Length: 358
Ligand SMILES: Cc1cc2nc3c(=O)[nH]c(=O)nc-3n(C[C@H](O)[C@H](O)[C@H](O)COP(=O)(O)OP(=O)(O)OC[C@H]3O[C@@H](n4cnc5c(N)ncnc54)[C@H](O)[C@@H]3O)c2cc1C
Image (cartoon, rainbow, N blue to C red; front, side, top):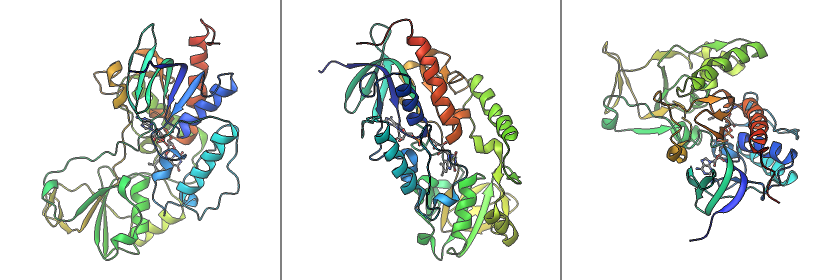
């Protein structure tokens, strides 16, 4: 067996959070490919954006923040965000020479020798002094369970498998979920589908006008409080509410965004409420969000009894060598940028006791 290669910092994930962290590492003197390595299991640059459906054009994205040090200018709002962001991340990686290694899947991180961490990957092992985990959520779609789900004769899919509205032409679609993906699916499907029905657990909350900084900060603070207590984070959007833009306003006026409470069971032909109401369906589209991809960290036993990882800033309370960026309160493009910088500042402090390897 080959010995583990040594480095100072391993960054897992080359999405917004991982690239922001890599940028700050490089800017503060860590050499890419030597003092730090970035590992990503996706085939191309772009993080999770590369997998998003083609009809999610750049113009439909709500407030994508540029990465630190390089603006995203002249993007055509009509082009798929998968392409726009993929090209931008590619340019970014090359401009700053970040030397992302892909496709490399991290399988497990465990305690190594000499106070180091051992990162086991599909391309051999790394021994590192610190870890920045930036693995996002796309790899872990969340499907709630519903009674009767296995009896449904139609098709069930999650946002993660959605590729656009055309394939649902003439079908009756139930969309489950009160987040931004749910409303976007409904607005897209309405002209194609024979019928759409929107169900959500809680009544959706829309926010008027631009989301000001103060409201943003208050919302993020709520998520922050949860992760400080070791509870699983809620998405930032779940506390900010849904932006009330022109398309959403039109959908509300047309009845496309008329919401019903969550159904009580799934039948072979559709969904049913306790009071006897029924909706026939060919498709149930679960726009029910994602959870943090953290399974590879399991050997480090960071999880609290509450089910989450307790985090102060970006640092895991149970192991100060481990930072989570793009997690909980930093799970937005702007939050990921800030988290990347803050994790690097903290790691520099941690490693300052010993100089970087020559
Ligand atoms: C449909 C949708 C639309 C969104 N729109 C917006 C928006 O408009 N504005 C906004 O601010 N935010 C938006 N978000 C949230 C936004 O995507 C995130 O905040 C941000 O882009 C996530 O960046 P990230 O780096 O944390 O994760 P990702 O972009 O998910 O990057 C994680 C990377 O880690 C890699 N990875 C995962 N596991 C492993 C492993 N074991 N080994 C190696 N590599 C691994 C993946 O390949 C991936 O490249 C949206 C999210 C969704 C789902």
